Amino acid sequence: MEERIDELEEKIAQKDKRIEEQNERIEEQQERIEELETRLRKYENPHTPPSKRRSGTDESPTSQDDEDDDVRTDGGTPGRKDGHNPEWRSPPDPDEEIEVTSDCCPECGDHFDESVGVSPRLVEEVPDPQPPEVTQYNRHRYQCDSCGTETVATHPDCPDEGQFGVNVIAQSALSRYDHRLPYRKITDRFEQLHGLELSGASAWHATERAARAGRCEYEQIRREIQEAEIVHVDETGIKRDGDQAWIWTFRTDEHTLYAVRESRGSDVPAEVLGEDFAGTVICDGWTAYPAFSSTLQRCWAHLLREAEDVASDHEEAEPVYRYLKQMFVGLQSWLETDPDPRARAQMHRACQDGLRSLVERSVTDEPVATLLGKIEGGLDHWLTFVGEPAVSPTNNAAENALREPVVLRKIIGTLRNDRGMFVHETILSLLATWRQQGRNPYEELTRVVHDNEMISREQTVPVVETSG
Image 1 (cartoon, one colour):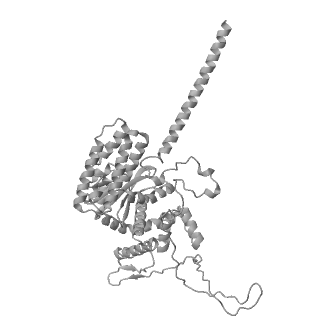
Image 2 (image 1 turned 60 degrees about the vertical axis):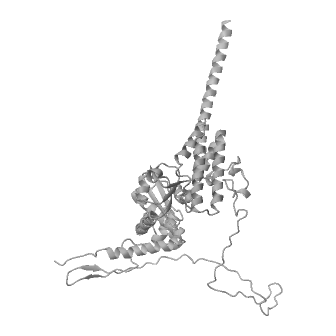
Image 3 (image 1 turned 90 degrees about the vertical axis):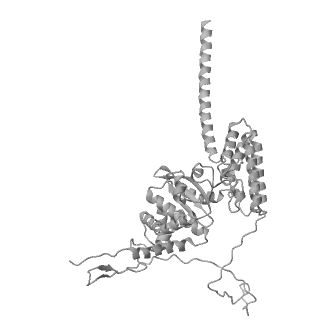
């Protein structure tokens, strides 16, 4: 009998051990599930634009055939969309025409009398890589017999510092911020194309010189934005020496300014735009914006994405999402009729009353209540675009402006110090603004570097030596 009891106790102990092991595996699997869900929320959340959300298909891109390598992972397809007109490349005018003739038939060898037609073909080619031009400037020194002042002669193409010219400085900055190359790759590029030996440190210093040369134009962009009637503003994280910082963008129709700051508070727009900024700020729901200005347009793209996300999990939010979407689509169609100011004011009041009624409904789900709270918190800022024709209902312009800094963030990882922040915000602002205005970034960079050299010479006091 005792042996039977011992046998049963041993079996029970074994089962308890298996149960304990299974519980441990379940806990490990649960932790793994939570980790994967956290990673998924990075791509599947209401603050992620549709273009960056992952495809809803279960098939992994790596399991597709080679012929499907160009299928996009966001659910779209490559190439021209249906209904869009094709874009044709305009043929250039030839710089030279060469007559290509033949004397005899390649089949039978009979001689041709004359050509019966011409089949033109345009061929575009770039010149062979050019070696660097090395110039020695023998700068003569002069001493005044009257006052003893010693002066060194200057030349417009001879820089006051360093041994690299304007084109090298401009190409270094463009290679870094336009072509997104690491500095070691920039040195490879100069070596391969021009046979110019350039160290990574020299490429960095050349890029820094381009930023210092363009800083006056950067400040001019800021002054233009400060005077604008409408400014799109947004911010995203960036690292400074491994610590959290933020890159802000301020964008108008013709200017884009970036500012790298360690703060995400209202002090940044107050610094960049000025305490007395009188324009309209188009933004998302971050608290820094209402703390800075009361004249806002909250982004409807953010609102509709968040409402859709909540409605997908909570049935109680479905009528809220439908109401918001119908209101937005209806307003877009109505505004295309170009209503007069009086009609706009009436529509503004009617829609605001509708939003008030929406947020006053009683709900039980906490996420739905949170959504309604956000709508209520921005009641004075959702409908600015109804009364102001030039105001956009979304902040897509600022979000688009942040795409390039986000790509660079993935490449460079972190900015090292204040000098890196200075260069980063300056070059990015200049390139973005020049592109908005249809200007050639390379030509503009060479211009600002050359002009800065001229201004520096005019403002620099010559070396003075007085004869004892």
